[in-house]
Length: 197
Image (cartoon, rainbow, N blue to C red; front, side, top):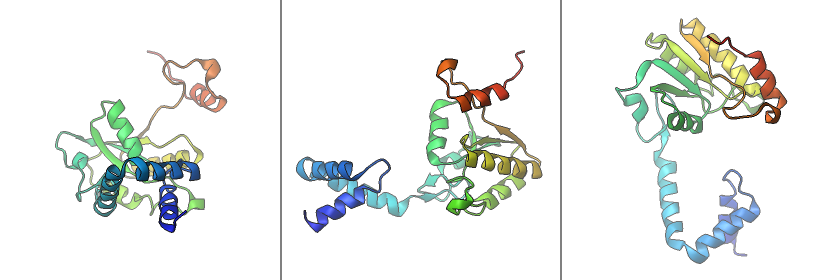
């Protein structure tokens, strides 16, 4: 196998979930059947890597200093939703009617991985909270050990700024049956039960 082909296969392995066999299959497909789209992919990928940065306000991916969500005058500026990644922001935008602002951590507190408050941009978040415009901060971190630790830290940050912290509900999925829900989820849902009005 040529060095360039080996390099292409190795480069494709950087994608999540792509191992050696999948990368080889992708490389062969592009070279055998789809060189035109392969060239287009390389052009767009190069441009994206050069031109997409982070919004100076929310840290979401953006080609401009302030992203379209932060620049929009139709968004509710009194509510801020904090998510771990741009993927979660996109999921909330697609699945809900949420019309507030966002802040993207680009990770979660994980000292073992070298991710502390500075790496998550929590100084920038504290500055936004201190502006006095935000009344509620929705904490939408994942229900993992690191996500819960991050949520606790964020709640303290919000309270210190006089902002009401709220947390996304976790528990039994809509349409789910209790016998198929894992023990941890069921225990959390049971412990977080609410009164019916």
